[in-house]
Image (cartoon, rainbow, N blue to C red; front, side, top):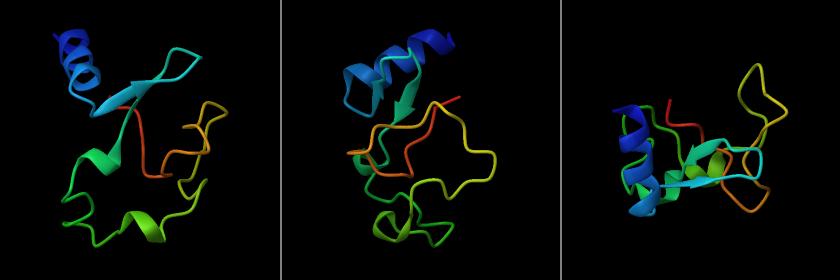
Length: 69
């Protein structure tokens, strides 16, 4: 079920895979991203989350992108 959901997100342009095999949600594909938290994509910086992993979204993607699960 989760694999099907992730595949659908990729197919519809809401997620993308990186070479390591991880899949990230593309926050730019969701116009109301940050509405509840008050975060804006342009204000976020890479590495802003604690516990940043070595497997990060590509540099040309917004730092808000994160794995969907």
